[in-house]
Image (cartoon, rainbow, N blue to C red; front, side, top):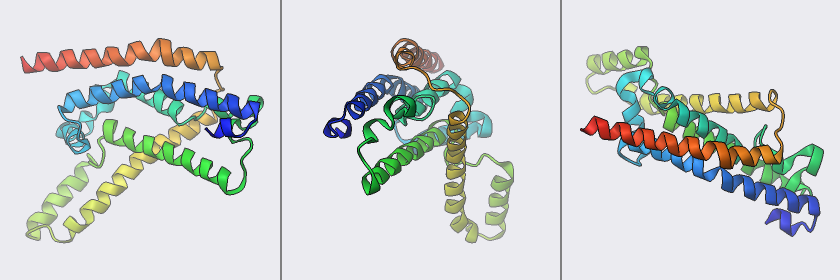
Length: 223
């Protein structure tokens, strides 16, 4: 809508690219989330995190769903329009894409929205694949048990526990942010046809295939 309302061919082309890119990467994202929910038998993020905490660090979906994590990571970068998938805003071709005619606070809102999208995607990665708010660090777990045993009901550690959980989740999210910024300075931008080929020809068979493998494995476990 921003590209169409600008009455500018470069902005309009950037808007079309953004729409095509978002649509093509929704199916792999949804398939990866469904694979995680099949393992947890729930759609609740709390249940997904608790399912990963059973075996500590080794119980993360990062190790148990490596194919799904790779597809989710690539799709998240494409959904957030980060390099090498920032075709809607390619400086060499479209100047700034659908943001060309916007400046001041309007451009600032676009900028904040883009970074908020990246932050939300990193939180999803932390919760779905990196164990969420469970630190999986033996020191903190033994410290909490000893402190609660010596202090009765847990005392101040029960008050510090939410702070530790929030810090753990944000630390894992910032790891994804760091990797996305690293790819921005490392990988070259792909062409639009390569982007759509990846979104329609390679990831759709991989992500639903991972979903079918997960479903088959869950059926075997139940039997």
